[in-house]
Image 1 (spheres, helix red, strand yellow):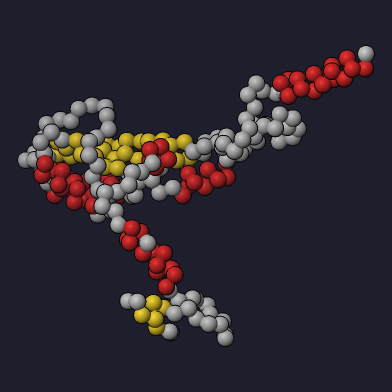
Image 2 (spheres, rainbow, N blue to C red; image 1 turned 135 degrees about the vertical axis):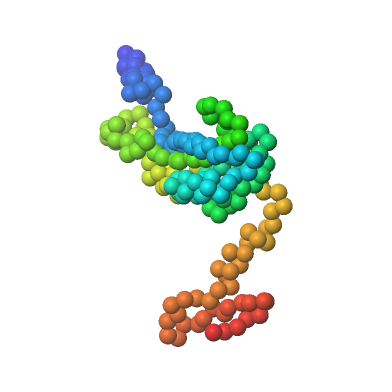
Length: 216
């Protein structure tokens, strides 16, 4: 009889977690809250009667881009069938904002009229719409579930600081012809530059220029 009671208690203990809240408890280190990347497309139709943008249209386009606060992470496309000169004019204006034209164009509503050039600015933004997330209490937590707010701090900082939110979706392939020396220049400068705020009696780190050491 005693053995039967012990077996029954053991079976009840093992079956306890299966009766906990939720059929698939969230466990592990995977974030519950992740950044959401949204894309918005803005269109601008400019007149190009002779295949190029007149000065008035160039000024209008420049004002429109300034109003959008065009910057890094934005992608600019030119949709035109044969206005190659207009594409060059648009490229010169966009280059002032540190942006290069992208190939192709996203699908937008409406067709481009004859004698016009359509400029499309595609902008992505990363946000955390689910944060803060206090939808569930942290205690009691019998199923060892991951907290509902888990990931808000780390991924929220990532969404706020990422330069190009497109990298969160697709990553970035290695650039052709990349030079490892160029990538190491910042590290080399940090290591070779002299210390600041040197206290009295503290040894200075020498400044290295052209493989020579100069104490200052």
